[in-house]
Structure formats: C-alpha cells, structure tokens
Length: 486
Figure (cartoon, rainbow, N blue to C red):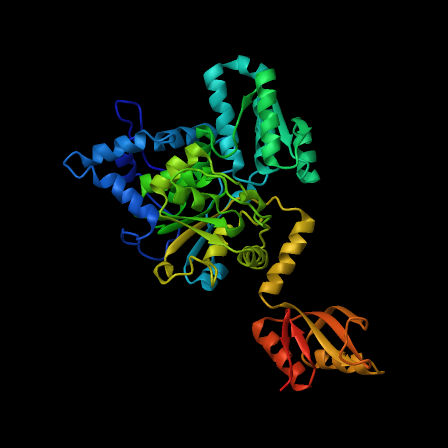
C-alpha cells in the first residue's frame, strides 16, 4: 500500500508529497534505480520545452499548475483508486525468470487479464459509473449509460453496470465476436448490433443517446475512464518501487495517459514507453501532427489497439508524461503471445502482449540502456477467440522457425516422395502437412512439386534441414524464397 498521500488546501493531492516517501516497501527488486537521464526523443524534448519556461524560484509551482490544468490529474487517479478498490481485482506484479533471461532485463508482468471480464477496462468502467452516480444521484439509475464497443469495454461496462444497478446499452458492430456478444447479454446489457465497424456503431450510439437520454461513456477518452486506468500505475509503484521503466500498449491512449500520470508523479525518473501496432500507429501520428488525427488502419493481431484516432483528453495527458512511443510488428506480437503461453502459461490477446513484443530480441525496445533494468509490462487483456489464438500461435511458431513451409521438386516416379520423407525423418523433422501437385510445374514432365509444412526445434534445426535438402540436390522454395543446390 502507498504509505501516505498529503492533500493541499485546494483539495488536490500534492504530487511532491506523493513523491517524497509515499512508497514504503516493495517486492524483490534486483537492480538499482536508473538515473534520470534526459531522453533525446520528441516526447522528452516537448516536456522539457514545456517546463523550461518555468526556470525560476517558483518553477515547481508553475509545473504543478500545468499538470493541474490537464484533463486528468494524479488527484483524479488517487480518488479513483479509493473508489474502485473493492470492485476490481488487485493484480500483483509477478517477476518472470524466463522472460527476464530472454530480454536481458528484470521483467515484471502485471496480469490485468485476470480481471473478471478479462481486461483492465474494468477499472475505468467502474470509476466512470461511480462518478456518474455521485454526480447525478440514485435517479441516474433510471437513465443508464451507453457505449460503442466490439469487445473489452463492452464487457467491462456491462458487468459493472449490473453490479452497480445501472442499465447499460452497448452498440456492437457486426464484426464483434459472438462470444463477447453473448457474454454482454449474460450481464443483462441491452445489445444492439449495428454498423460494419466501430465508427458506425459509435455514431448510432450517439444518436440513441440524444433520443433516450443515456450518458455516453467513451472507452478510452472520458476523464473518469483515464483516471480509472491510471490506478494501475499506483499499484505498479507499490509492487515494484525500484521500477526503471514501464512499457504500456497504446490504442486510444487512455491507458498510457493514466498510467504515465501516476508513474511520473510518484517516480519522475521512471521511463514510460508506449507501444502500438505498426498497422495502426495513431498515437505516433498524433505526436507528429501535434493533435489527434485520423490514421489509416490495417487489420492487426492487436485488434484491441486498432483505434484510428486517439482520444483528445488522453492525448493531452499522455504527451505530457510519456517518454517515447514505438511500434511493433505482427511477427513480434505473435512471438510475444507464444512466449507468454509457453513460458508463463498465460493466455494473452495480441494487444495485451504488445508491450512485451517490443522488448523481445529485435524489437524497438531491445536496447542497451534497458538491459539489466527493472521493467514492468502490463498484460492488458486475455479475451482472444480460440480460433484466433490458434492462428496467432502458428504465426509465432513460424516466426520462431519452429514451423517451416517449403516446396521441393522431386521425381514423379515410385519412391520419389518416399525418399524425401525419409530425409525429413533422418533430420528429425515432423511433417504437419504435405501436398503434391503436377499441373503447375513446367520444367519436366517426370517431376512433381511437393509442398511441406514441418515442425522443427528452431532456427538452427531449420538451417540444418535446408542444407540437407540442398545437399541432396532438391530444387527448393524455402519460406517463399528460391534456392537451388550448388
């Protein structure tokens, strides 16, 4: 628990008091706290420029004034922390020995997928409903709330609406997974299926709000939502007070806005990194433009992060506190999901695993300055369909070269394919799929192409198998690249 919070005469929590001794103890930290070195990235430069104009004896007060004028402050997060603590799961940061070895740093995982509905969204949803009840009183239960969502926000709002006795209407696009639609119905939410995508669903929800008087709750931009998400930052500092960096997935920017505000208030020297899929880099685009802008979106494994334009309130807060935002690839995301399942026995959706994805070897945060540091990675959600999970794992195995496809040209005479499979058996390759075709090979009428998908042990095993095939004079198409024996 945080030891003490000191309130100023204005009723806001003093950030200085929170930073000076608010944390009394932590859990098994291994390395020293990183120095507060100045980053050279645009976010750090922007924050330095904002605060440099306050270089005077009253500079701390001026900086606090800037922060107090943001849409969400540490005081809001602290109030949310008290309000929701009995209604959500208090997840504990867990040290991962296996992932620490892979990354070369002390990796702590915050398993938010263990919330009742499977994601961190419960924090903001409960805080938003409670805020409305405080503002409007018990009569608000007659009005209810409405939201547009295809997944986690809908589930969280439906569940906590039922728990708090507030009617919930959720507009879900036609692409929403049926499993999530059924779960929302079980929480007694009114479900409306409308629109080909979340944008059309949102427009329809807003039109319903005007006619029926519901209050619309944005899943990533409403200040109570951001404040609720920020309670994760307080818990991170409680569990790992020697944390050097926090790596947060970014979609609509609500989570990173809240977490960065809490982290930077309690421990300013701690770095906060954002990670978003390269197929929907809306926060990066907003930073370049200086404001939220529409971003081209391509379907991604991190579907929960595919928000084409970040929230305006969330952006104002996040760009003030976040040190840097990087992107991650589909390959890295699939590997992160695979690593979590194999090493930690954790089933995490693509968006929830994106923070880890950037830290894995070859990722944008695979950097010398982070080696040996204490890094906390929130695992934001675990609501992934079983069919999608299978595809993601296959992609992860392929990225790991433990699942390889190749096309070999063999003799179309008796024993031709048998000799190939004998070679595969000799090399320890397990055949997962095999298919041969004659019609599309034009080099020789007495040859046939054999398409194989084989299970291997990794990159070294794959290299040995490819060499063995080439040494045995098989013309080869390996992972869509043409090879011929010398």
